[in-house]
Length: 510
Image 1 (cartoon, rainbow, N blue to C red):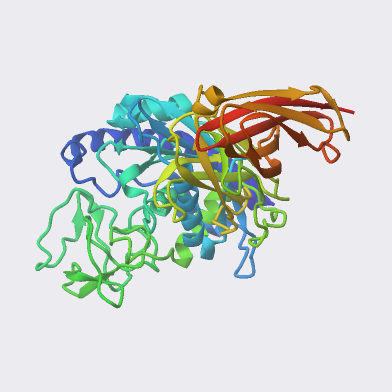
Image 2 (image 1 turned 180 degrees about the horizontal axis):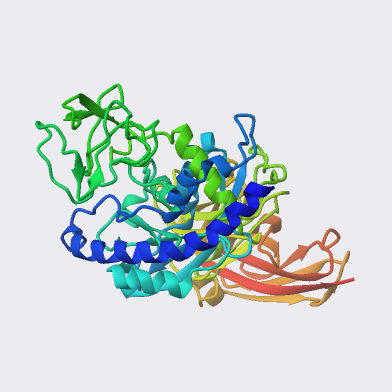
């Protein structure tokens, strides 16, 4: 209990000091980011968290929870998606879900789990000066829109010439560095929780690695292989080996750098490529070290305790809980510029990923959004006279990894409201209307020629309830519509064939 009180007191000073350090980081970054527009710098973070100074100075006052601490630390995140008026500028929501899911996998050994903030999972901003920003634009974006008591993660096109950066207690990601298998999110989240680069001190410094490293860089000691100065040099963790590589680099099959370096004593070594906080390529990175994990968990329990949850979440959504599609299904024809999609709720689901595609492989999306309800109406971007495919995936806020529980529906688009050839050759009247439930309604069709057609009845949600193929003779035709299985409400009666469609609204009363 004494150590917890001490942690909170020191944290007040840390927050104030951090603002000063990040201001110095801003001045340094402005001078170095201009040349990175075409090839993004991996990370714009070059500072050292004042909280980490406090942590190393007071580790003995922190209650040791020991290796038996299996508590999962739950961290809420709001994803700010920034775009402009250009088509496709906004990062897809489902892609963001996948990225956070992968970040959770990278943090699994640390027992830190990010979940979407239940009130504000996604926030959109239309602002060109934030979509592609310099450091002043990034500062304005964060300080104008950042919300309290959660991690604020921004996705933009160009974050000041970097793949990403952590600043003002937020993380900012570039779209181009946020693909599947990318470690930028986990890297910047590590900065958010106090971790520096393992090559700290080497940022912006050039060196011929055929020569032994200097004893210090601008007064900061260079880490040695004998670990004699590991707690006050480099990233100040002793279970991360020395690393002087401040650029993107490849690794060998042992997850070590291909570049050999020499420490100040001339001892040769190769950098550890597995460290997420380093600059090795994404395919090389995989882990945080035990000391890094201890620091991040302590940071959450002190500096970021305002949004931390340590209770286990409720039961996750069952991965085999498939979404049941209601309508449109079975190649049902729908109005192309007003497609209403409906599906059954899944117990435990907080979000639904809804997609419409041209092909059953879903290689190209006409519509791709994450919603909280169980229906949506799409009024634009859907072509006419096409067979299209749609699917819905269910997620819960605690576990946003793709559950692979989607079932595909098929529908056809038509312009059902336009004057068409069928209306020219057939006159249609529906009687009685309203009709009492249980009594048949009659669709009277006066046709100028013989033809085949399809008669169907759908509810207000677009779900087809009745359908039959009919033959119409030249002259008067009477088609009986049963209502004994219809509850009170309104329905759409459709007569259609290759000439077009005629739709009548039918009201059923009790």
